[in-house]
Image (tube, rainbow over all chains, first blue to last red):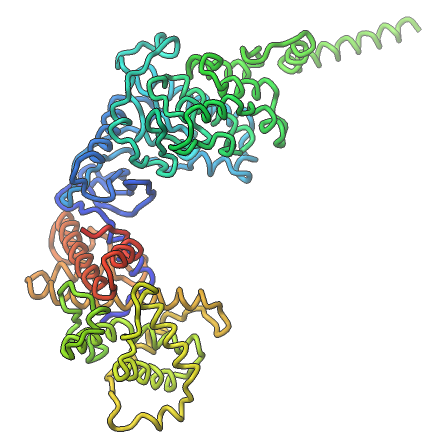
Length: 380
Length: 255
């Protein structure tokens, strides 16, 4: 009997769950992530000689429900061709009965890791806000194509080495009633159809975060605590529209600003046996994120805190109507323009203008000072 | 590749059946009990030897004697009759038994006690000692009990997988799939990642296509997993324990 090294044992243990890719173009290299019902593997596409990521079910799915869900995710990705959304290449089933789909292998860092205290120091506010804008762009694109993400959180955002930003893990995405919803129409008064997937898979774990999948008297909740909108948390599936993702984007913005995930304590879901009135009340009483955003160092500009607060308003009607509108407000902040979420009095407006035109202001003041000194000197 | 021991090791056999050796070790049928004890001994003697060496800081010779005596006593005294699968795993039970046994045994006394009628086990201690020296586990005598539990657990896995690899080699040979096993050995059993050849190199070496390497490895891994699960089933006392262990060791939910 051979002595097996620790590395060999680790390989053999991994081989226990390694999908059987025989007969396909893929050579599985290693497991790079896992979730409730599947995992993501780094693989090589032997035909095109390139690396790809394979999302694969952990087990053969005899009943086909998980397979359907995985393939549905692939279909959603396939129709969302956007630089901010990871492209899907292929889908199928391995010899061992496990369903999979192949997508671009994104080399980069997850946003939660990028935004930790050490890395965050290297990213200025404008840098972080530009990342956020790209996330909003991708989400707005999905909304325009009738798709809600429903699980936006730092762990599902990848930032590449060249600044590319990709929204990942569309496993709990929801297709709105009208797939051809226009960009203008989305966010104004969209009405979501009942979510057949969520209803059919009520109680199934999310690939992204199994522990966040809970059930209420109203329906299944798929998402991540702290980033879910109050209506999503209450399981009001019929009420979900792009403003639910806007809420999650607000939570992401807050995370980018202060590096902390929104508190889950105040948004913890009720137990299934709990009265349905309670979560509603808990949500409506949830404190706005003003204090948490302002308490971190460096101080967060009040206009930005106001943007996050508006995006995370408990009532959907009080939020931005779309991800695009939210991104526009952030763009206005970056350009030194007034933002819709932050009404200005005269003093605030002057302060903003002074900040925006500070170089010109310094030059004018310098000129006036020199001129005054010259006049004073000539009169002597 | 030489065999380590005549008990369990020479045939590389955990019998390829689905009975539990843990339960069979308490059977009234001497033949069944003997076969079960053989399987348990094959899986556990090396981990126990290494455990005694490190946990009690025993020299090579003392550890050999203690291991011999421990298993001889296990067989003679039918110690496994006291094992209750509802209360603990077999590993935990054996570890507690070893702790008591070593604490209560004086080497010299014990040697005297071991007379001509005592069971003598043919175990390849030099091989076990060489493995220990090769692995150089960073465990001192004063390390925590949890550390030694982890060590024993790890060595059990090493032993179980080692026996499974031996069985896989024989299985592949019997099916005319020697190349499958050789690929598995070169790729999955390499000591460290730097020693591993790539798929293209392996294909060249065996004059096969790269896709064949993928397929052959898939076959070998699939069979390894099957054999390892069968072996694991023998070392567990209930279906529930088996499934729990399968998830922990191989990350799989057995069919």
